Length: 100
View 1 (tube, rainbow, N blue to C red):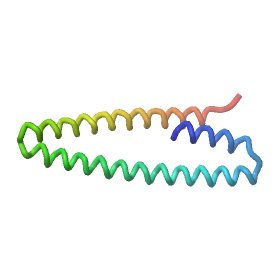
View 2: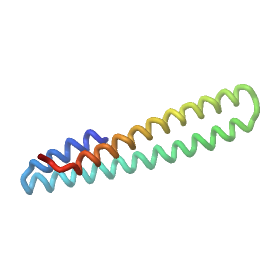
View 3: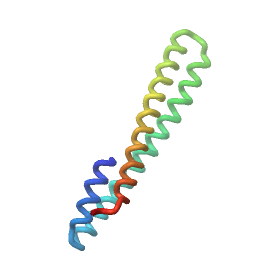
View 4: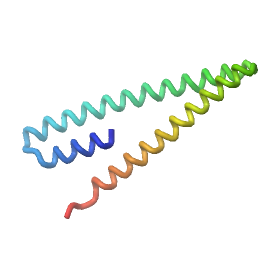
């Protein structure tokens, strides 16, 4: 997502007015699609947490093992999400630097 945005940003800056308008429309559509996907993923993570809590409450060994797998998957997803946020922040910072 970050790489695509940076590439489109460079295209927009180099384009003429008509092409710039089209590229900006594409950028908005991409952002809308990405936001929808993030909302869907967030809802899925919430459902996984709720399911893990319900399964963990059963108290059986298989239930505890399944809850542990869910917890590990959610922790891995949280780590990935944090790295994406760092990349996004870095892309914003580098795009604000003055060009020489």
